[in-house]
Length: 112
Image 1 (spheres, rainbow, N blue to C red):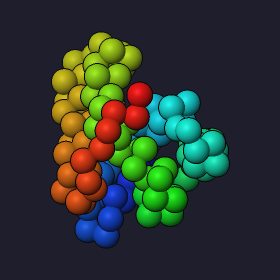
Image 2 (image 1 turned 45 degrees about the vertical axis):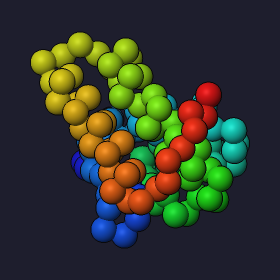
Image 3 (image 1 turned 90 degrees about the vertical axis):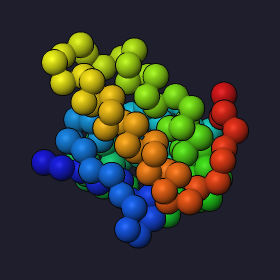
Image 4 (image 1 turned 30 degrees about the horizontal axis):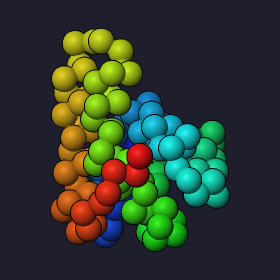
């Protein structure tokens, strides 16, 4: 089943359920907003399959975008299993990062 991240109306990213969950799990331990992290964990735990960034507070949105831009692809390269599809999966993660720019999110500082 495909899962969806909506960055803004008209700018979204779809992925397999497993990659979607991994993308949210990448954020959960990194977010300083524990309420936002809890909301992401609920999405994963209940197989809800969609995240609308606009549903989160603006500071959490900026932090999420920062983490994706500054670490998602590298984490994927390091953590995802070595399979014949890994290059395509990493490219797909890069598409999410690219979409954060298409959605008009401002430049971010590395959230550390």
